[in-house]
Length: 128
Image (cartoon, rainbow, N blue to C red; front, side, top):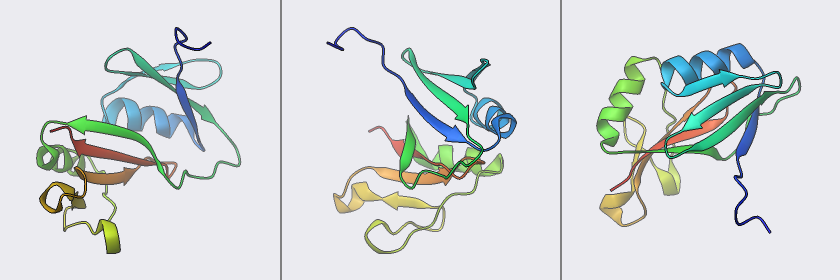
């Protein structure tokens, strides 16, 4: 039924202008405005729709993952742009930069989480 349908993901934010600046300027994604919200173009032809929601509550899970060739460089570049990385303890303990070193322990990829201005969780992860 949906084999040839171009599905897309969506999520809410509390401030559409802050989202436009963050996703367009900070992350460097192609952002276009629509009457209903924002459309992000993702490499490979994918799209994500961002819509304003007055009673927005941030997602408690990762809404977008960005595979990168060099997680160290990506974290450093984003940090210079003002992005703050999350720091976790326990099973997904992150280091001083906010990177979970999953590859070394055989527990998944190296990954670092950060939030957009609306508090939604995003990540960069090694695509190796």
